[in-house]
Length: 81
Image (cartoon, rainbow, N blue to C red; front, side, top):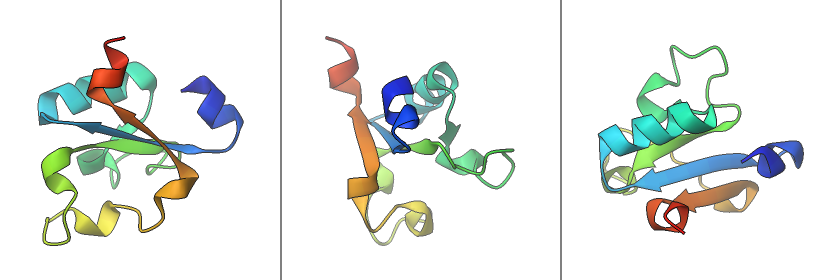
């Protein structure tokens, strides 16, 4: 995560459970998508989402980036290695 931030890249953490996403975001120092409006950083460093939020009809769809290439995407199973 630090390397991505040093390169000016935002991080998108994708998990299959909200609680897991919130925990990983706390661990990596980024916001969970539901915290963007109340956070001091406002998602500046990236944020985490549940995979169920990654569709256009999601109530959070306005927060999902149109251009993922500026993000470093972290998926839960990669973290298990």
